[in-house]
Image (tube, rainbow, N blue to C red; front, side):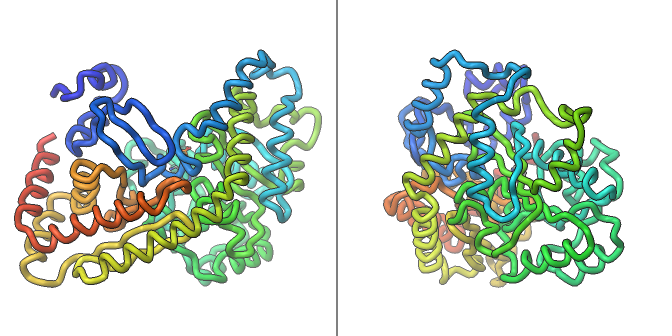
Length: 450
Ligand code: PMP
């Protein structure tokens, strides 16, 4: 099948043809010319609002001019970028700053170029520190697609055919302290890794005392507590880390995504001095964990400039206020609809949870649809939000009935009002128009054919 977008053909021929087919099917295969803040412009002049932020990459908006200026200056300096034989100055500056912002006992940083790489480092470091091999994680978690990270995610969707995964990994339900306690009591686990707010599981918030109690239980059993703040970090939920909402002091924190300013990949594993010292314990181990690109000056500069922007523009506070406004307005607009369950979230991280309808008419259409693919209802919303209303959104990978709304923290009331009106219109048509369902069923059948 030839993509309708000629520019996509080369990508389909030489990178990933299935991705192009999926985008074609979802009618999201458009070319972008210009991206600034929340607003994207396509080559044919359409205005699209980004309500996904690249899964929480663009906290500061697309192409922030201050970050671009800092990167240009860095390039112009002709400095050492990936020399591998010196002390990279900016890495020290950035690490000191990250530890200060994170607070608690976090005093050292191992850099990488992605969230998954940070999770891999957390696995290695916690094993080395504790001398144990087991890893505990939560049902519904998303930690990345490298083999180690993938071993910390339940279900077979991501891992089928890539195995064997790491041994000694065990899943427990999120928000279940009794299950955690029971597993920790075996003293087999090096670390318990958890997202403070589960994102792909459906924007699931922890009970107020969950993380603090988890910390206490972990400490008692000699297991390290690792927070995956790849999505929740960098002020996405208000404070610098979501951990700060809950007064928890982890042994390690994984960060990535927005640390890059959306421009140069950066990942960071923050950890206590003790954990770090048990890895880099002698001269012989000075290079025991590193990677070529990890401390490159462009990446470090991107992160430093991103931190400047986030603090200078008080984006944590702004995101908190706008996120609350978004959820309040969504609640008011959608609360009368049968298929709307709730809107939940924290800071600028929100999920709209839908539920199966009860009334006969809707139920028949919904069940037909669901039988074709369980994610189809959510994908239909995503498609229509994009095609008809010009919004990028996504459904949660591990709960297809939750639509994510995580725009950049620079989103304005106008953006939010536009989104609320758009989703209300679509949800209304789903409840009142047969055409919405017949079109959706057509889409679902097309999926079956590709
Ligand atoms: N952890 C979480 C919570 C994530 O959302 C992701 C990516 N979506 C990762 C880890 C992996 O990050 P990356 O894609 O940068 O490897």
